[in-house]
Length: 561
Image 1 (cartoon, rainbow, N blue to C red):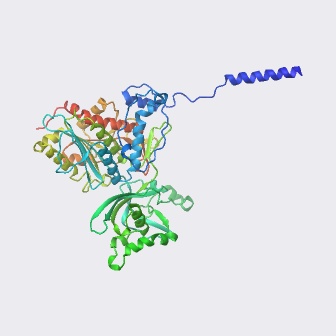
Image 2 (cartoon, rainbow, N blue to C red):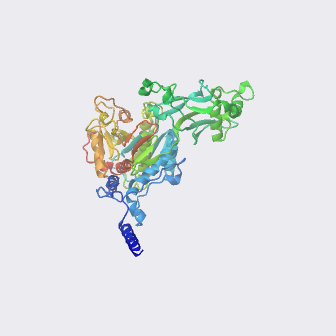
Image 3 (cartoon, rainbow, N blue to C red):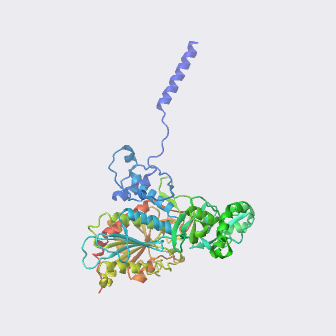
């Protein structure tokens, strides 16, 4: 018995000794080295590694409030342990989270402009009209057709000669599915109700399949008791529609391989079941038809009653008050921060609302102190870029020319307008194509931009982009001054080249113009991706443009006569 007790005691001592010496395995310390190094470069230009950032939560909002649209603070004076551990995160994730809120709220050009205006007003910008006084230190904005935005500040400093215009141009529209003028679908069958849609722009339409879709846009409303028409914005928050893929079992091998989409027949969304339609549409049909045949509205009679009733409920009006609309489908999934190190922003409409967001942030930040600025700092965000910019308020319209003329006239310098144009500069900013690792052969080997690696200068000798040696040098010099890395993009000779608003603006106004943008993947998909670091690069470059352009441009010999 004593021998057995001794063996038991020895075994117990061995177990206790092993437990005291054992520690759990830890992940490598350098797991987040790459993204932390990038964040430190943004902060101070050094390559010193920053502490590991915590992953950011998914951002989901249905509206952008004024309190959420103030500029991101970079104050890191607190010395708590959490602040120290999150120093890398605070370099760029707060801006990405704020961008995600804006992207989620801006479901169409009308809402993109509306939320931008709310931000501008919170920074003291006032609505500008041709009769408004334009003074040094002033902050102004105006809209065109509710989907194009012009905003600008006037520096307080006395200029030498005329005030130059420093312009950032972008666009508010993205490829989507728009409701046709007659939304009632003639193909309703098999116990389904569908809506007639038109493909807007050059979308990757297969990415819209099997997504939870809803509607937003602008509605023209008749005021009760009068012929007065007002416009109201509407956004349905819940998923009301879906475009379903055909089951793989019902496709031939050739059909599966082709993966082709017929835009007319395959993109028609299902919104309801026919079997329960009569109960829901009764009130709408009664209002459409009126009390007698003379009251019947021809436009209303061509619309899907379920849609009319839902829009009327959302706006708290009667169906008979709806005069017309401009409605688009959008994916209800909110923008989100993703990646193993929270280095990506997943969202719809990055092309080109990422530019709208960053330019808005830069202008409002710049507006806080105009004492050292002698020029006009402006952002101009156009509609209809995705369909060629040829419209009453696209980049091919007189909008920018009129803005330059009207502001110059208000400042009393229009008589010297040629000098003003010669001194001015426009950054045409549109998202750029990052190298896709699965399709890297699609990029020219020496001109392949990467995510989270800086802004991209776009060049095309056939003038599909407006960049030339002078405008490229100016932007690279601005990037050097504010520590923003610059990348270059040239399309392969055996590939077609897209275009932007840059050549259009340059040709219409004579402004020195460059084409550039933040890199992304999945352009024109229902869901796109870009690097969160590049958002901060974009913001820093835009702020540097407003602050340092005169300094850079002053070093360049001018041939203006």
